[in-house]
Image (cartoon, rainbow, N blue to C red; front, side, top):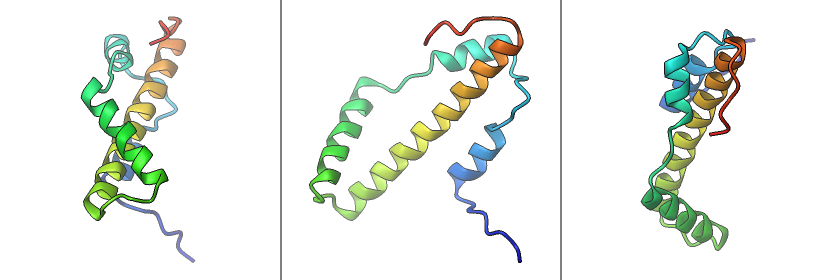
Length: 96
């Protein structure tokens, strides 16, 4: 029996970035660790999360929240890979 694997854009990219090799170049890893969402995006994510808890999101807002979650998931995966790469290079994560 074949295992079903979801193939949304986010999941495809996540699998691409989920390397256990720790082979990201040091400069790239440092740049990835500096990635952050804009303040306006953080505010919007918070607003959507609050409305979601109240169950008052429209369909388009539900999709927007899902898109923010997908973006955050990818950034988290990239940061994890960057930290692994710096560790394997003998460099400490600067805590960003």
